Length: 430
Image 1 (spheres, one colour):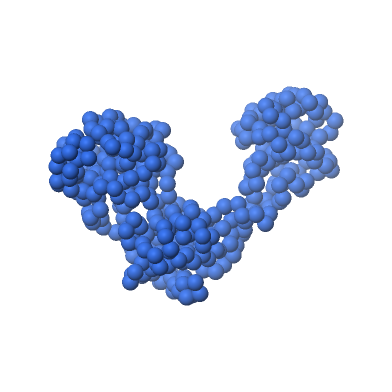
Image 2 (cartoon, helix red, strand yellow):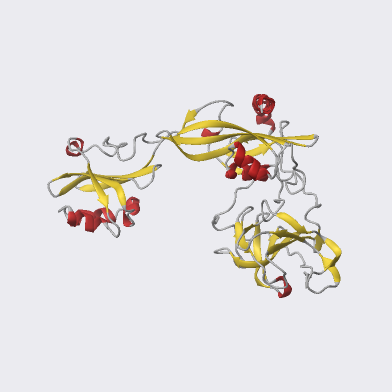
């Protein structure tokens, strides 16, 4: 039965603060560091403690100051499946007591689960270890060096170059298929849909012939692309409308997307709890129920998606229910302040740690699409209640977040002009 009794808002001012933030999908506002706030068109390198090739023989940072270690070459060690540091030391006839001592160093925990392969190098003098370097990933490595009758361990983040990438997309079918053909990574296309989610309904507003231009960051190391950075600016033409997004990092290191005039593109709530999914059934007071074959209120919106698709919280809130609820099946209800409630129904399961009394963040995965309860197939039923009354999630108006601060607006507007010039040039060239 698609019915949710009104819940009387309670007044709880001194509630517990959110404890931790489980894995979540990106939201319109994202944490950032000041190094991300770069001038349009610049290329830079991140600050780091070292910039070396994987497992090179150069000593690292400020801990490799042992004279003996400096005069000895590194040996490459092949880590075998099931190897431990003690087992490797036995095989190399090194002092096992040293392996045990190193294993107990809090900053050397990476050595407790060794990845098979050529990821280990050592320096030794007889049976005594002078230095050790473990690098299972390209982005960082662990250095262990003997110093003053003990060992010092430090994880080094390798420096990588940041390059700005420009991609123009002409929509010929779906946004994601068109983006893929144009060379725009799917994760960047997905981010664009999040940024513009309150300006554009991507299930109905985007059509063949529309244009998208995106400027984003790529991370490079050893002439390899190792990752993607944030979207810096974007322009989307849908029919007769043109939408822009400019990323700005404020004095506190927080990045937010704004219009070229400095108005925030963010709302308190996300538009959809299943980003990218299309609406399969809308809000109605007299919908023909697909199973019961009678007309009855459908006080929410259904999003069609495959079973197991992540469902995210549309706003920061507190879990007040995470259990079965009649025809809703497995259900989560969140409270957002005193007046707002959201409901997520027909779930196949709940995300780890999501239970009554816990806090969740906007964009955090809280459950997974399913077909529990009175349902004809996998989908998410989503409701918003304001002061106890169901509202249509597709038409409910939410106020924008604050515009850019007055003391940062002038510099933002100046940078905005440069971004707009680049975006327009891309669109013209495309």
